[in-house]
Image (tube, rainbow, N blue to C red):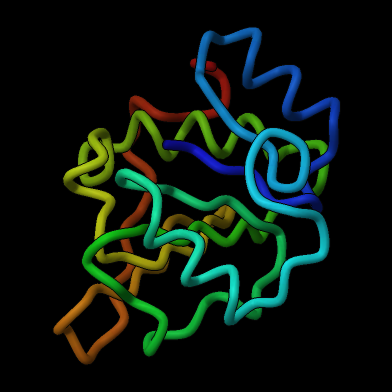
Length: 136
């Protein structure tokens, strides 16, 4: 279940939907607007394999790793949000919900910075050559 934070621009949500990727907007489709971070983490635990996308880099913290959800922090411009989400979905390390669970991912131009549950060191994954922006 892909859940977008309230801070994801509507133009980017519409672009993702046009690619037939199912998403839910926090505060509109699921949950309530303005939910506090601690309450929000409990909310995620009530959903089936949720992947939460946000532009709030404050969620990129190792202690927030949990086996039942994935947090994706987007460190790209507002207008690049959809493209980089699509690149993430096509990355071989994260192409399924099962591979995504238990991780916190910071998406950037350089690649993916990843905290994993039960791993004490942050990992870096570069973008695969076949996932260039030109191919999307």
